[in-house]
Length: 276
Picture 1: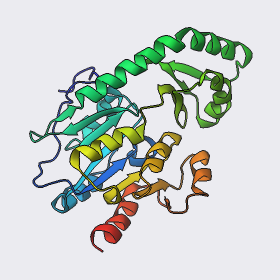
Picture 2: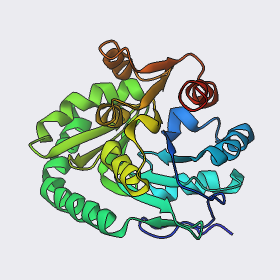
Picture 3: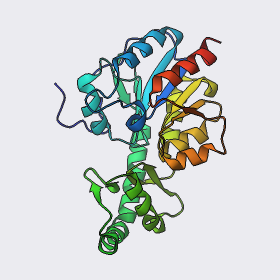
Picture 4: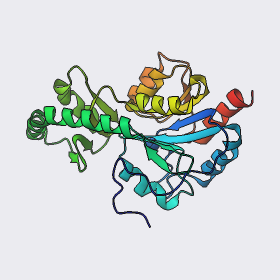
């Protein structure tokens, strides 16, 4: 039975696939717009079969998302035979499978993330409240809502709406702060914690060479990981956000996957990096 709420920092219910031997190759996938196939079957059975077949080569995989742990697991637990080998949530918190197959939180790292972002929340709270009230008054046509579980986040009707909102939020960004953006979602965050830094902790813990990594995502928040790991095989779906596709014009080494499906690009990577 899935708990009604899975708190950030807890051990997620369920287990990763059994493994033996070291992690040699690391696959990191964004969730929304990348790994997610549909709301009724968010990850295909074929994907799990492929990941299982590659475990003998030392391939381990995970989800690196802006979603909270609860928001992610409530969707994938009902239809996933196993958990990923690692999960990075809110672009900062890290969970990795131990020898018992459970995903354990990186306690010291996660607590530091939480404290620093709580300090940011306290610093920005009144300013953000005033700015959003003004935005709602002056631009009533823009449809958005504060995120239910994060006072530093908002959810817009769609990505173009968020494009229109972002310029009004930029005055709150100062040194050490950043806006993490993925399509119609955004949050203010401590700039020391990104999808890139979360993935770096996973990489270091399992001692995986940077060139042995596969990273795929479609949102602006995925650029932090692409920039941090230039030797990795980095890829974006053809349907990625326009800002991501614009960035790719200056980075031809990043692969554009013509299919909006991770498997064809993963198989290209496997043939060229592992089988080669």
